[in-house]
Length: 341
Ligand SMILES: NC(=O)c1ccc[n+]([C@@H]2O[C@H](COP(=O)([O-])OP(=O)(O)OC[C@H]3O[C@@H](n4cnc5c(N)ncnc54)[C@H](OP(=O)(O)O)[C@@H]3O)[C@@H](O)[C@H]2O)c1
Image (cartoon, rainbow, N blue to C red; front, top):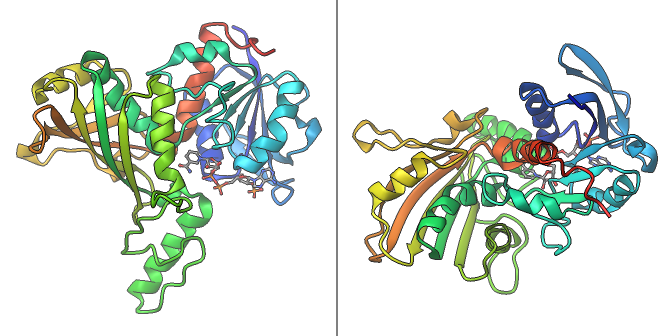
């Protein structure tokens, strides 16, 4: 079996750490793994498969001999180093927002639009975490009965912001329980025991950048501009696992049992839906798993063609590292690694 030289840029971060786990768990065909981060982490050793690998500073020459580079160090780093990686012959799978809306770059969720990998020119973008779990759940329903409108509210975990935010929630929770003032650094207000309806910058229209990402990315992945979408994104004091309340309007009625039947066969989806025993998806039980969990499937009483779903996934895995590794696996399986040009 052919093996690949793999690099992770941002290997010390929340998503980077998950990349290391996912690559090992899925036996990704690697000849070697190169761990890259900022100069702050250079020389640090990380344990990979009982073996210590030294973290190196990301430099223009870091990509010589690399076949596949997973980028997860923010949009600025992706914009700066990705072209150098591609120039050196690597395929970049980028977790940041840098290239998601670039018409020359495919934006891929393997369960939904794997064919788009084919036209990559060296860079493939991994969508925003909240968008990934929503399209995995909605795309099979859309194929059966085209969706006209989506209204989604997200409940996003702090690990979606990165390692500093996880630390902030830990520290603030202790401060509050000890009767002290919680001091915010990462977020504009206290996140412990609180909810912040602000993810990304506010725009002139009252939405945030994150909310527009859900609209634009969903349309690009599902290959349609015809779906009306409105999102409200909130940060909640949960360490890992994003939850979403999704109200969908279809072209014709979508009975809940039909939606259940379609989703039972949908790739990457697991239904947890038995309200008689309080069975529904929850973030804490999604941590460390690969599926997109769907529950609370019921009619939307406000519209004859409406359906309501509650959707949960591990934002660091399906929302980031796992989806990116699945893109690489699909690219290898279909022999589309060397498409660049
Ligand atoms: N967390 C999620 O759920 C999620 C989901 C989808 C996408 N993403 C995206 O993934 C990226 C990383 O997120 P994260 O949550 O892992 O953040 P994080 O925990 O803050 O980690 C950031 C990583 O970037 C590295 N980095 C910072 N400056 C760098 C530089 N100048 N050169 C090279 N590496 C540098 C850091 O290295 P040092 O340790 O050396 O500083 C660290 O490894 C972001 O673009 C984010 O939008 C995150």
